[in-house]
Image (tube, rainbow, N blue to C red):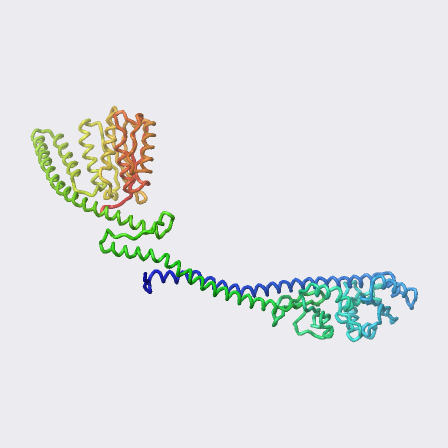
Length: 594
């Protein structure tokens, strides 16, 4: 079976390829791009976490140094030594003893520096930068001096004596205040070995960081985990205390502030992650190529399986369009399994069979319709003889002085003429009310002076289209079942108005009313007719029969006709009170006669 270049087969194949291949290709590209970004983000998060952990370790170490400085500045041996006026060996021995108890190992370098010129007490050789008053305005001595005599928190200074031979990244200092004046300073040096043991070694052991550095606010390198020679130099990485992450080249770096302007930064290479992303992208492209080939083969197979029966159906439809109602599309026998194409072919064949039957029936009905039209034309001639007869009766009655008989004959002729008038089963409210008045006038001759008829009709409603014989049955029902059994005078009122685009027509009598049980049964039958107007109404129960033998069938049939024409929201409703009368309300859409 050959398919044209613009056939359903090729369009379906392209659609399958577009739906199956393009999203997968885009997904593969997005996956390749996203995987690299996810890996880099993962390494960034790990680096940030590792640097944050190292910052916590460094902060803990500096906090411990500050506590030692504060403790020594308040200890009795140190206060006693600085209060003496001479070098008392016993007091100096007490200071050394507390040095030993506080410093523990040689990693802590402790100094007590008097401000009165006496020699300093130190647990290590005294650096030149700690000689007072030679360096009283520089370094940590100058920072302590600027604090004054007020008790303050310990201070920190980075690389306090880089040229002394002892590598000390940070020193903590506190003033000893006597009599409101500083009497000396306590300085605690944190050695590089202690910094490496407490901060560098744990960070390196985690395998997350390859570089760790501490800088101060001026950018001076206080500690470098991998390059001790760079310490006391200046970093080009920016200001200390910056926070964030960046990818300079093949390394990921992050920096966190510690305290007093110092910051800790760490780096980790991401070249391995990028290499893995490149390999993953290659595998993704390979899989995308294989899937493209599989998608092409699957698209051709699926397109052919769908387009072939559609093509057969198209050929059959073309034959039918040429008038060949005997054309059929070959069925696969799979329509019972739920195959939509097979169901479509099966329904098409059924439709053609029904079209053949309909055409046959239409031909038969057309033949019968022509016969009926001929009979109707013959039947229309018969009323003319009846009209002529009624006219003769009316003339004879007037000659004999029987005016009532003449009026009744005239009203009857109008009703008969309306009944045989050619129409489309619709009339207008104006014509319906005219027939109702004629009928009421004929019936009123039975009870002279006893019944009255009034109308209150909105002029705008007179041209509203109504199904034929809607008003007259209501008037007849009111006369026969409401007013005729009444003892005394009675009144029949017809009201009509337009409300919210609908015609509301009320026929009210002052008759005997409807018993409650009968009214309830009638309303139930009206409600059932609203739901299923096309079904024949059920027989009225015995208790629903009126005293005059009525069953409400006229009301029910009128209601069903309105529901069938206009829909369930429209129709009849009944209100009645025994001994007071009955009101039947008709609601139809307001449609003016064209």
